[in-house]
Structure formats: structure tokens, C-alpha cells
Image (cartoon, rainbow over all chains, first blue to last red; front, side, top):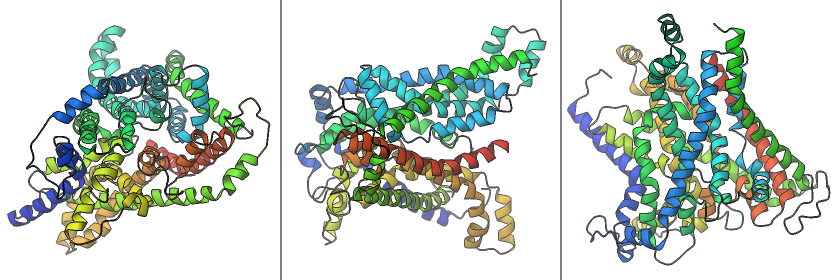
Length: 276
Length: 290
């Protein structure tokens, strides 16, 4: 906005906006603070905000007592594995749709979108039984395949909207100049496609990391990611607020940081290109 | 440019993605449909006689189903109301000039990246616990009696938790739409003497209407299948007060081992979701031509 805003009004807006922001952010901030308290301070009445003895005890306990890194490793395996598998299938498909569209391209895209709307619970039973039958229950491989399939439509869509913005003429120009196919791909197309692919990867990692229907229903311990690790805190075990907070921070911190960096691309990916 | 050769190449490039999605969609759905006509329980998995529509009549006439259907609707509509209205207001706020706008923006979108199980447990224990929760302590501090959120108002609690998770999504998309509105229009209206409220009502809101529709449709798809938040907070209770369709179906299978009824429930959920999906696909399809 180019309009001039008076300083007084700007300060008023600043105070109000920060207040709103802090209220929304408060549960995360509070979890962050609590993760550095002792269990006693965590439930003290009245609550203490910053005037407590900061300790790393909870983080140490989480690391040593529960095998946190086992779950963390699973989260990384699942989100990266399903994303990599997804790219192998999605890049060629999106590429073909963007550069050699046919009459049916639009129908295929919309059909892919509609598979995303199949409620998971509608296919839970057969997938569960198939997993039992093929020994995939609580295996990383099985979950990677499921996460890959539920996110594939989003991958194809998002890549398609990015690829469509690459002008086709540039390929012809490169060909005219005598570029070979490998040069065409590595030196002309790849540099233009990489940013789109990167943001698609980010969104897919976020979605897979936080997926909590299939990961909760198809794992017990071996392949369980952080979503299941945190869910295990839901049964009351006495005073555990500080430990719960530390575990929560460890589970959300990586993705929070990734998410903050990719907020712009997120809109496009989550609305299937409908809002840019 | 689309010669026969490139057309075939394009088909070959699309085929793997199309085929795996086709299998993913058809095989399990056909199995669910098949199981839904059997008397199939995990306690006696070797005898699964055909029972026709019996599972459907059992599932649909179960009073819990009606409760779950009502809860599902309350959950979806409640969260939509909070996130759309809140999202519009916060988007308008973030569109203003103020100090630290980028930091406030980061704080506002943060809840979206919090995994559902973390969000639910943090709210259940640290915010809503009647004794140690922050909300309870604040209420006590001003002399009110704190309530036990999870047992007294279980569904409202879940609405609040889920709305907190989705508010950033609505805000982010509405803000993106808002920032594409040219300021010329607003300035012209201002010169003609339009007040802030009528500018909002006649210029800003119509401009955002499509983004609002997109938010409503996409959120509905996700909100129909809320599961983890219920599992780690109320487990659908007390009674069935916070059970939604997704939770009910999963419960039929995991707690009661009734594969037949769960499958019938799954098909019902698919039909409900499809009603929403038709609208969404049309809307996005229209946009694809533009």
C-alpha cells in the first residue's frame, strides 16, 4: 500500500497486531518455555513465565529414557522416502501434462485431485488387512508407499503449476542452437525447474511429517514416527508436562523452521494452484 | 509441436502415476465395498457369510451414528466459522503497516506446522487442564471457576484445537488474495467518500470471495477426517459426545473388530466426502481454464 499512515496509528496497529500474534503463538511459546522447567515448576500455581531456573534436564531425559531418535529417524525416513518416491512418479507426469497437453490432460488432473478426497477411513480396513497379509504392518516400507500415494496428487499438481510457467519456446530455441537432449535438460530445463521442485519437496515433507491417520493406525513401534511417539504421552503418567513439552518441541522444531521458510509456496501447493 | 511421437512419450510419462493412483483408488475401495456386505468380525474371521445391506442398516440405525454425524457437522461448521471469520480479520490486520509485520506473520502461521498429536496434547494438558492449564489458572485468577474442558465441553474443546491448527491456513490464503487487490480501487472509492466499512463490504470482500470458497472447500475435505486430535484428547467421549464419523468407523474396526460394520461406515464416509468433492473439483476445474 502506497498510502501514508500516521505514526500514531502505526503504533496502535503494532500493539494490537503483536497482541493477536502472541495469543495465537502462545501455546507454542508456552510449550517452549515449559520444556526448560523442572516438572514442579511446570505445574506451579501461579505459572512462571521466564523467572525460573532454566534446565536442559528434560531434553536429556527424552534422549536417554525414550528412544526419541528411533522415532525421529522414522519420521525422516518416511517423509524423505515418500517424497523421493513421489518425485520419481510425479516429475515425468507433470512434465508431460505441462509440455504436451492433450484434450484429456485436464480431466486426468481433476481425477487425480478427486482421489485425494477419498476419506482415509473408507480404505483403512482393506489396507490394514493387506498390510497384515503381506507383513507390512509396522514397516517403514509399507508406510512410505501409503504416504507416497496419498500425497502423489498434490505433488503432480504443484509441479504441473510450476512447469506450466516455463515457456516452451525456450526449448525450441535451445534445439535450434543445436543443443543435445542431455544439454537441453541439464542446462536449460533443470535450472528453471529446480525452484518449483524444491518448494514441492518442502510441502510434501511437511505433509508427510505431520500425517497422523495412517501413521497412528499402521504402526506400533518399529516404524512409528514422531506423531505416534507424542501420542504415547496421552495416557496419564503423573507429572510429565515438562517432558511432554521437550518432546513436543523436538518433534515440531524441524518442520516449523522448514515451514517458515516455505510459507509463500505453501499457498499454491495447498490450493492446487487456485490461489497464487 | 505435439507430434504422434511426443504424444506417445507423454502418455508413457504419465502412465506410472496414473496407474498407481488408479490401483490405490479402486482396489481398497472395491474391497471395502465387498467387506461391507459380509458379516465379518475379527473374532471369527474364517466365517464371513454374505449379509447384503445388514451392515448398512446396523451402522445407519445405530444411535451413535446420528450423534457422530451431528458431531461431524458441528466440528466442520464450527471450525469453518472460526477460521474463515478469524482468517479474514487477521489477514486484514496483517495487510496493515506496522512494526515487525514479518515476525507477527511467522507467529500467526506457526500452528499450521504443529503435528496434530502435539497440538492436541499441548492444548489438552497445558492450556485446558482445569488445575494446571493456563486457561484455568487465568479464570481462577479473576475469580471464575475453571471448567474441565475435556469432560464438560468435549466437542467445543476439539473445535477450538482444530480451529487453532487451521486458522493459519485460512489466514495465509486470504492474505495472499488480499495482497493481489490493487490499491487504486480502494483509493478511488475513498475519494468518492466511501467509509472503511463499505470499502470492505463492497470491494475487499467480493475480491476475496473466491479465496474464501477455496478455503472452505479444502478445509472441509480435511475436517471431515479429523482423527488424531480426538484419539489423544477425549477418545470420542464422554459417551459419544465427541465422536465423529471417522473416529466411529475406526473404532468399529479397532475396538470392536467389526470389519463389516466398519466397512459400511467407510462407504458412508466416502459418499459424504464426495458430495463436497464434486463442488471443489468443479471450482478448481473452472479455474484451470482461466
